[in-house]
Length: 132
Image (cartoon, rainbow, N blue to C red):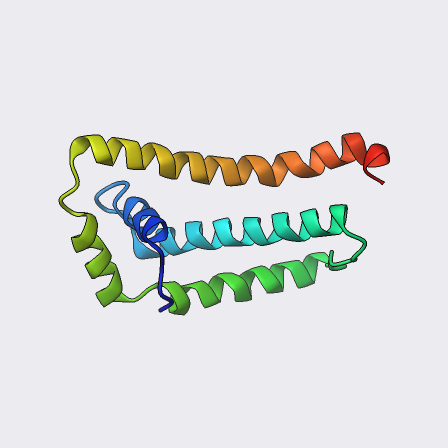
């Protein structure tokens, strides 16, 4: 498992304990979605604002295969039962106020990632001529 910063550990904690019975697979899939979205955003930004052509020519079959491999790698990279138990113990005693603020921050992060994923390409399409 990779070493993680405090915000990311808290993100895992909040996702895993959003409801008391959230399965590990759901948490790892949400993390995979976030990472895949952020990679696509970075590729899009580099492709748009630099002369480099980093946007891959993906076909539907290749895209599905890449997504399956990417999500499949997330489980061994990010899930470790002992580490997640340590993360749980680290944040278990948080106050209701900190819990509420943390939940809001995590939701803003998740919704913001999704919003940017769909908004940036639309804005690019609208302002394409002025960017070049």
